[in-house]
Amino acid sequence: MTDCQLYLITPPAIDDVDAFASLYADVLAAGADTPAQIACLQLRLKDVPDEAVLRAADALLPLCQRFDVAFLINDHPHLARKAGADGVHIGQSDTPYDEARKILGPDASIGVTCHNSTHLAMEAGEAGADYVAFGAFYPTGTKQVVHRAEPDILDFWSKATTVPCVAIGGITPDNAAPLIEAGADFIAVSGAVWNAPDGPVAAMGRFAAVLGNKR
Ligand SMILES: Cc1ncc(COP(=O)(O)OP(=O)(O)O)c(N)n1
Ligand SMILES: Cc1nc(C(=O)O)sc1CCOP(=O)(O)O
Ligand SMILES: [Mg+2]
Image 1 (spheres, rainbow, N blue to C red):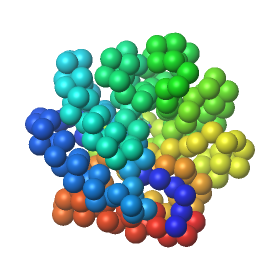
Image 2 (cartoon, helix red, strand yellow):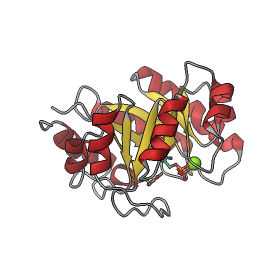
Image 3 (cartoon, rainbow, N blue to C red):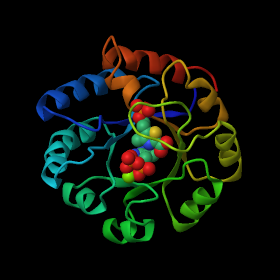
């Protein structure tokens, strides 16, 4: 079994929060005690009012706590603090790391998007980021991306530092293996779970199989 873990990101829009929370509970249960056990859920709602983020957080945080899953909110450190989240993920055009750390304090988990740049990752790591995220590794329909990363950045990073690295971008059970083998500590996925033709629970089984292989 690899030591790479699954980092789940919500869809960018959730129309029915209660229905999504129920589906997320099924996904949590499907991954529990398997190699696809979810390590972190990121709430990544885009272009919605703060109230919508907080409403979704209220529904999802208790489920994360029940399954010992870290709960991060994307982009907004103030909302992460207000929601009682475990941390925030920030990109290069979001709140700067130092400001996010001031807002959330020393015990929060703060992840930083570093695209395909070891320079950005070194800066984030030296500043105190809890993880760095590299991507996009594959084409994705979830986000308009301009940067492409190759697995060798994961190999370099995992040999050069102890700061955990997250791989993201178009990751599926069929293309995850090279990223896992290259040294990703986490694979961050969204569409491959939520948009799976046979449903998110079946997708979790496929991720368990690929994450269960020897690194
Ligand atoms: C784990 C993880 N990695 C990268 C991103 C992308 O963040 P960002 O560049 O700020 O883009 P948006 O997600 O905010 O559109 C992420 N959210 N999570
Ligand atoms: C949110 C995000 N950030 C990316 C980056 O490259 O920084 S790619 C991406 C989309 C992730 O969703 P999916 O697993 O459906 O591709
Ligand atoms: Mg962002």
